Amino acid sequence: MNRDPVPIGESLDSVVRSLRPEASSAQPASQPAAQMARQMGGVFGRWAEAVGEAVAEHVKPIKLDGTKLVVEVDDPAWATQLRFLEATLKQRLLEVAGATVETVDVRVKRR
Image 1 (cartoon, rainbow, N blue to C red):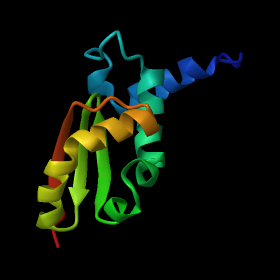
Image 2: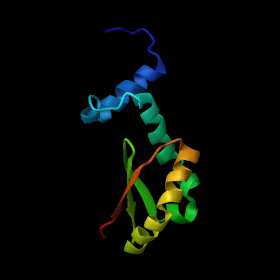
Image 3: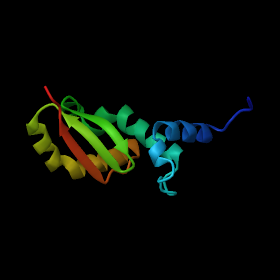
């Protein structure tokens, strides 16, 4: 086993590929794994900052798969509200988290 230091980008690449093995061969060349890891960390780590406390109380990010974001809402009314806020949500995630989101898939949490 090689114990030489490995650049952080290579380490992140390895971690992301292990978490998303199906994406390793289909991953676009324009979005390396390290960049995807930063975007995931930004979306999940800075969610409340990006969307605001009021929205964050009712809407949670579940999965970021490339440019598709899956969120879960606690009430059907929030699913409707999120449709109206979708463009703003995408812009805020780009500004705050550095994540490009093209599609938002909204799911209502089962009770």
